[in-house]
Length: 265
Image (tube, rainbow, N blue to C red; front, side):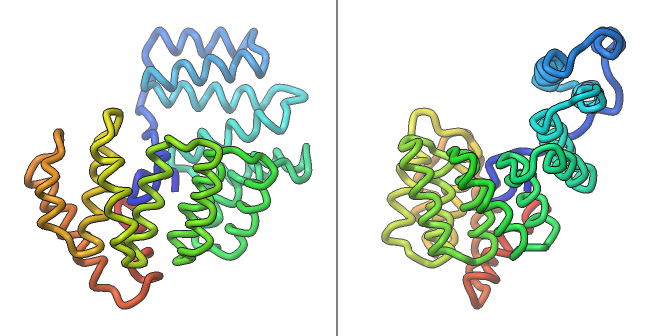
């Protein structure tokens, strides 16, 4: 779910059709002289510029170096997921695990792909094992998202709570928790949390959109419109509320979670 949907906080980076001439020159030079660590740094820098095609080629080059570490293959797998190539990502994560069995970051990546590809039970098991190993906010947030999409609201809330113990002010975790609560129709807890996130000075449009979904999921469309969140047009708010209303009509938490997870999928 490195797609930006509903609860997801990790956005897809679509591969560019071609690289700039300058970055192509960097790519050719790096292929001839770069160590894996240098290639990974260059790939990350170029990806930030939006040239994902060249960046992915650099990640691949780094992994092709003799003695490339398990971490290098995880970096490549993550890059494949951002680019929307889950099958290649699986191969990279498995290559990392071949080099370092039970390597936490590889288990997190592999579990995330498995969940996205529909192997929910095995994916959650793998993701949970990797998350316990790495013990990072991002990993716990991913696990909570995956549990939410699987309709496991109780475990998801516990996971998000642990993530917040590591990063109490993280808005991504808070809004994900609010959506999980809303899917379970717990308006009393979901709405104050969504409002807090949406009105925070550092709230992004993504946070605000998800806050609107929270209000819609618990049937409070009027209150959602009354928030008058900067940056969201009336048309966009209405569209989000219409989507949330359709999710709310589903008969079970799992059905609502799966419908939410289908946005942009």
